[in-house]
Length: 249
Ligand code: HPA
Image (tube, rainbow, N blue to C red; front, side):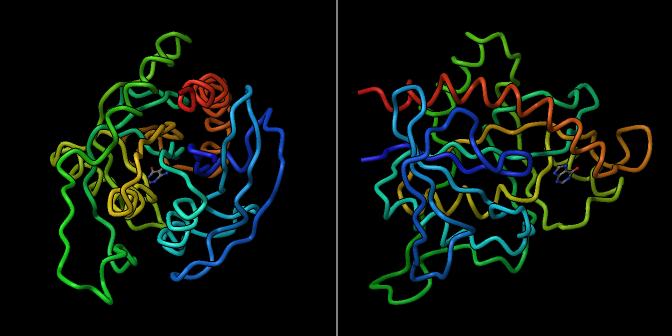
């Protein structure tokens, strides 16, 4: 049984060094996931991989079928998920390319399908979400990145915005006043759905750019892509060590 899954974000549409065994197209009660579930082996450990924005990176953050992705992974037997996500850095000290392991999240998204508890209920369900990320997986991400000398920021509040446009400088000022450290468009409802489905979920974020009003001018896709290329090299190194460690009995 493949226990661990990686959800790849912008800049990570496949895992280097993954020996692919199968590609499964699956259907869920919530519709179609973003793409096939790719099952393979890395460092002697089994892992499942799904690309959040689709194999060709064509699904924007507000159109991702988060419910189908999470449901499909759980149906495949997954109980732990490491989500990789590109983000903007709100604190100017957060250099592009740096890894961040958030410990909190604030949801600013709207009109997304954000719960699996909405129909055919025997009773109303409220899940505890005080600590939105799985501490066991967060600790593992932190420990392994320390061992590799990757200088990951070990706690941060992720602001999940609606997109697909980037924020205004004033919006980023507001997010900072709210206590947010990084900003991205895919953290919610993904984290909450993982909790609803009883999955241990943690995020490894990569700073793609200084958030709006925090850098030298407009944010271009070219800059984002260039910074992500550097950051994702670190993510590959991290995952190659973490996948065997997370699946070890
Ligand atoms: N804002 C929101 N999402 C993002 C950003 C950003 O600046 N960079 C990468 N994803």
